[in-house]
Image (cartoon, rainbow, N blue to C red; front, side, top):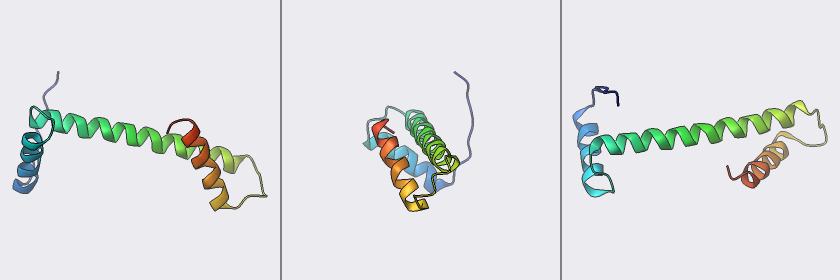
Length: 82
């Protein structure tokens, strides 16, 4: 596993160490890895949702407004488990 050094403010360092102590993490590095994984999942969901919105907009379906298109995309995303 690669090592990366990151500079944190004292407040951020204290936060990470506190979270590692009080939550389910063995080390501060475990906490940071969990944050990265959660961000990856969030990013994938946003990308999938954007793809659904783009698909809906490209369909040329003029009977729906933007808010309806977003609702349709949300419903499709939910059906896909996103």
